[in-house]
Image (cartoon, rainbow, N blue to C red):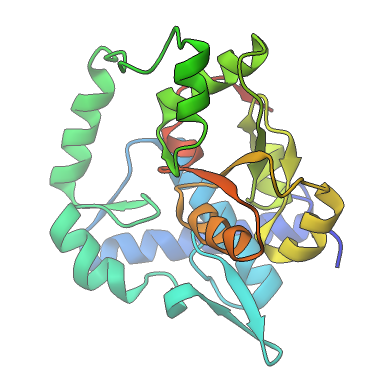
Length: 245
């Protein structure tokens, strides 16, 4: 199966997206939640929900991999929006669902304040030595600043790795990390992986929207014999570097 490409400008998708926005509006009202103050997070999740509705007939959480088992689609933990973990655990405990779209009013207010603060530069954000870069590229989990630093180090020839986006084609078109080398969508993972022709001995860093799908893919790759896999822990929504569209 080749990479599934959904035209986000098509009438069909736009109709489904409008239905999905109306759906998330109802969820917000039902549970007395609010949207994330980061509009791009909400838009990305809504488009992912609309995509899954078109592809699988259900609004599976777009932050988790959907697999077809016995001809029936099923997501990890069977997460269908609004998912049980979000209602019972994530919102009460963390103030925000895993995908980031649904928040408590208190969390949203805090997030707005954080967005208004001056960004603090992470200690790993700039100026890696070659030795530091070679150690960092072998970490299993990376944050935004660490990936920015590794991409800069790669440009300088200090380290080599492949950066792989495991989101869907439409998400890639909306925006992807500058320097991403391959698109291997979870909906056609194994076929796309074969086309990507990745070396099992090279360093590979995977990322998705918030880090869940990519973490799942990292485990699959490791089981397949890919020895050096890293994951962008909180996905592209956390990434502070350049985004290409």
